[in-house]
Image 1: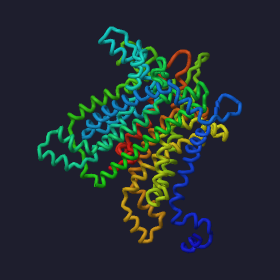
Image 2 (image 1 turned 120 degrees about the vertical axis):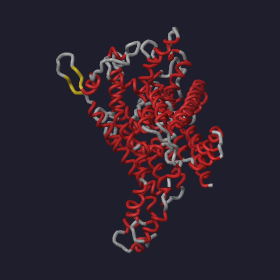
Image 3 (image 1 turned 180 degrees about the horizontal axis):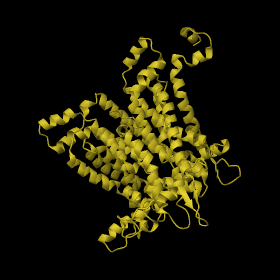
Image 4 (image 1 turned 180 degrees about the vertical axis):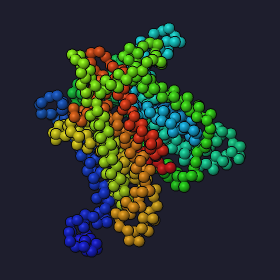
Amino acid sequence: MTDVAAVHGHAKSGFWARLTAPENRGPLLVAPAIITLFVMNIFPLLWSFGLSFFNYRANRQNVPEFVGLKNFERVLTDEKIWDRFQTTAIIVGSSVTLQLIIGFSLAMLFAKHFPMRRIIMMLVLTPMMLSFVSVGVFFKLYYEPTFGLLSWVVNLFSSEPFALLSSSTGALIGIIFADAWMWSPFVMLLVLAGLVSVPKYLYEAAEIDRVSSWRRFVTITLPYIKSLLLLAILFRTIETFKIFDIIYIITEGGPGSSTESIAVNIYRMAFQNFRTSRSGALAYIILFIVIVLTNLYLYSVNRRAHEETL
Amino acid sequence: MAKQREIGKAGWGHTAVAGIVGFIYFFPVFWIILTAFKTRTDALEIPPKLFFTPTLDNFRAVFFRSSITSDETAATNFILYFFNSIFIAGTAVLLAMLIGTLAAYAFSRHPLKGNDTYLFIILTTRMMPPIVVIIPIFLMFRLTGLAGSYWGILLLYTAFNIPFSIWLVKSFFDELNPEIEDAARMDGSTDWRVFFGICLPQIYAGLAATFVFGMILTWNEFLFALLLTGVETRTVPVAMARTLGGSVGVDYGLLAAIVTLFLIPICIVTFLLQNQLLRGVTFGTVKK
């Protein structure tokens, strides 16, 4: 270690030479990223982990008391929480399925070069670039019984008053529809990335052999995009699992608590009831689920990388 | 290299089909843009008005507030908010790219002990629900006086963008042929020149993808901006949400005008760098 400077040939400043020595290059280059992430992510994460063992409330002055695992116990035995998990699962399941179907169909449409492709694709990509606030507010308006665009269209066909958000099933459908609309383009991009990677000679060979288009899809296209589809499912599942803004604006979790997702629940617990510590405990349970899902995500990615090298 | 993996070609017939589907998909956005040009009564008219006399009043109202007592108009702060959004998102994404590219190069060329563990933890910080850290970050910002300052929100957004910058850029470095770099080193190039002269020019596409993707995600961030920006540093999504309150209900025309204006910069960026987006969506975890 000490003769690093000597190897380099300049003995003037030992510290600087040691710092920029070849074997320290990795840590040196990584350091800014790790430091930033530690300060802004890891440290707050540890802080809130600590908080979840106390009975801290952000709106009270008194010194928080250590309560051990009580917050976790409270959260895990609360039936309401399980109900919120169920709501979240329904939203995640339906929305991700819809995103896959729509995203996949759109990808098939854009998997060719055609005139004005870039401009038309922009139309489809725009929903992803809207803010949650604007999607929330305007979809709420579209669903509105008297002034809503969608309600107007429905009323052309039926005379029954159409109030989507007033029933719990309807409100769920409204949320799922808005979320799926916003994020299907993302799935489309993923599937497109897969479709582009299919070697063209396979299709040419299939054409010579006069393989039907369905068989061509099953035997050539699907294997190439299968793992990307899996990625899309996992990635969108992780993101949708955290769904908050859209629900908060369109229904605020209602009617009743029928559309209250787990993230909305945490938000309420933390900022309306000021049960800061308990919300931290619940947030950690979510974090744990997200870590498991991230592991699955990486596993499927690695498998794909492995398949490709074969 | 990529040429043999070309996708098929289609003609104007396909353009027509895709155009119709694209327009249907775009319709909710199209309606928002139409609303931006409508008067308050036209905006909520039933049956909905497709044809109307367009007005620019909503766009004027974004920037100038008319006063009840006199004919004079006072400027709103929206120019500042637009500047904030562009400045904060742009700077944070570029900063994250700088820090991320250095780290990505190290992860790719000078692996540390436990390289994969570091990468996993980095990815997890991106996947975690923001609500987990929002309270500590809020307390931290209040204690250090970062709340409401440009530095605070820039630092936070930079951290927010670093994980996928690293993952994405690393996947591009991984794909380069290290033999070229070794050859250059044999010829006496310094590591510095290898990095800037040989590696970086080969991954411009990757940097572009990182930029687009980072911009889309940062542009619309709401929760942290709501809690951590002040009057001077407020971004457009927060200002947008603040127009919702009030006793007269939502002014849809005004909101639509803000949404429309706010879409323009991000659409331009995305359109110019569209081809790189395909790489961005997978966070670089999947190689072409």
